[in-house]
Image (cartoon, rainbow, N blue to C red):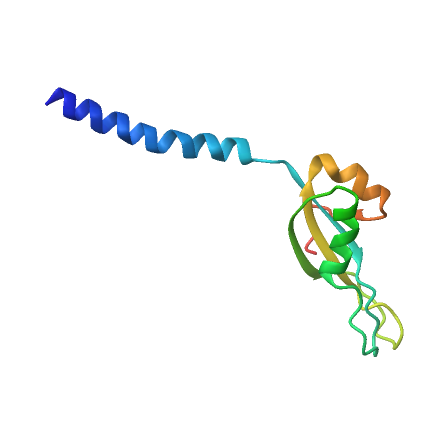
Length: 114
């Protein structure tokens, strides 16, 4: 009976420990960066897509964890030809932040609602 219990506990630990170790090693400290997407009020063009702008980061060795469209949150003037406030946001490894800033991306403040 002890052998069966020992085997069950050992098997349970063998199944749980690798996933716990994997979670710890996969954790990367991240930062969010953005650039205006180039959309203008009253324009039929859609500005710079998430994928097109992502290529700038990728070409410079920066891996993207997540990406999304957003808005800069500023009260802008809604006049034809003026920027809409649309931005492309990318989550990257914090270690890649200096390189992204050199590419004129801006860091998204974590307290921001963007």
